Image (tube, rainbow, N blue to C red; front, top):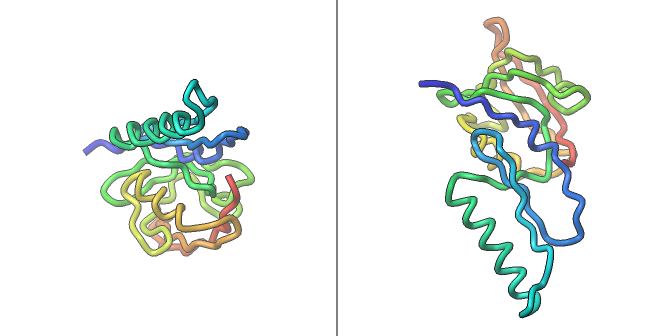
Length: 151
């Protein structure tokens, strides 16, 4: 089975928009944004319907909503584990001691086999929450405790 390389860095993207919008990412790290940017001829319900339809359509083909928090690493997912390939300087992953090559065996008490499972876990948290991450490094099991930051 080939590992899928997914840039978790996508969770760093910021949305600066006064209209409702949502960032979604797929397992290939492709990010899209659904937004209602106008009201059209029939008023606000049309804009909301277009926004909702955009979100539903992308979720049907495997996109998941980016959480409001970030951790700051790139990873390859395979067999219920994530191998860190890159760390974002200054983000929670680096500050907690994560390094490229670390294999995450558990994130907040659960295995992470895909970007979807990681996003599901991160959706349960807010900025400032501390999560427990178990990693394997050089044959040793380490427990790291990053404090999540706002995206």
